Length: 88
Image (cartoon, rainbow, N blue to C red; front, side, top):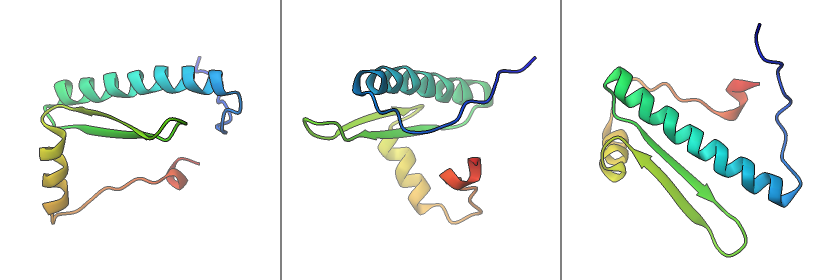
């Protein structure tokens, strides 16, 4: 039996949003690590947080993130790009 689908919408309560952000960010980085190890691929995840007090950058890379991003920028083959509208 699968989980019930939840409606994705912005979290209005600041504390709940912060807790959810930390948990989901850590889960995302763990999944990126697992994908890299299990499939022997390079993975980079970059997250910008624009909280009060200034923006903050979080990143995970199976190798140096800058190196992976530079490779992606130079890549001229077929790309599989996803946007938020692809998940509705």
